[in-house]
Length: 264
Image 1 (cartoon, rainbow, N blue to C red):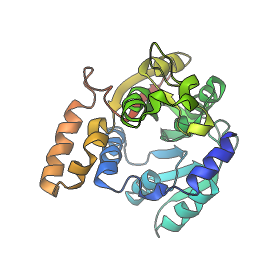
Image 2 (tube, one colour):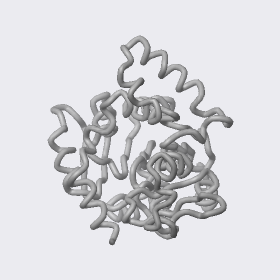
Image 3 (cartoon, one colour):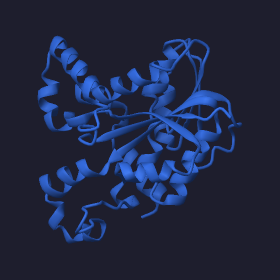
Image 4 (cartoon, rainbow, N blue to C red):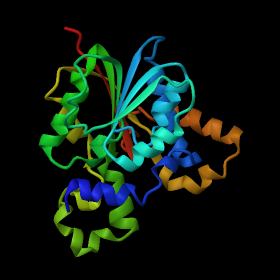
C-alpha cells in the first residue's frame, strides 16, 4: 500500500479534529502549547507543517500570531478552513512536508512539525522533512518535532492487543530488541530516542527539550476523562513536572523534540 493511499484511507475515516479535544488528548495539546509558549514573543511568525485540521494553528492565530499552515490531506484542509474564525491572521495551503517548494528559506521564528514524522517510512523522507523544516526556520528559530514512541506501542500493540503472536506483523518486530518497523499499512512510523538522535545528528541544531507529551495518560485515559477540573489541573501540574525527567520520559505515546536552529 502506498503512503498517499494509506493516509487517504485513514484520514477520511478518522475524526482527526476530535483527537485533541478529550481530556486524554488535551494532555498532549496543553503540553505542546506550554513548551511553544516558552519561546513565543509578540510579532513572531509561525509555520505549522502537517497542520491536520488546525487545532494548533487556530489556537495561535486566535492569540494574535501570524500563522501559515501546510497540510497534505484535502479532507483535513476542508475542516481547517471551516474552523477558521473571523480575525485570524492565518493561511493554509496543500503541500507535503518532504518538499516545501512554495515556502522561502528562513521565514519563520517558530516551526511546528507535529504530524509529518508520524507518516514517513524511509530515512530519505524523514531527512527531507526535517531538512525542510529547518530550512524555512530563521537562524536562531525554534523547531518543534513530534514523534510516535515505539516502546509504548510494544506494550499496547504487541502485548495488550496480542500482536506479538500475529504472523502478519512478524517481519516488523525485531525478536531480540523488540524494535518495531513501520510501513504505510500500519499508518504510524515509530521511533526510539536513538532513532531520533541518529536523524538529528545530520543537522546543525541545539536540542532544548526532549518531552513526553502524554506520558502514561493513554493507560489511565478513563480515569483522566472522569477527572473534575481541579483534579485535572493537578494532574497537568504533575505531568509537566515529570515529562522531561530522564528516568520517565520514555513512558509516553508521543514525543516532542524541541531544538534551536544555529544562528551562525
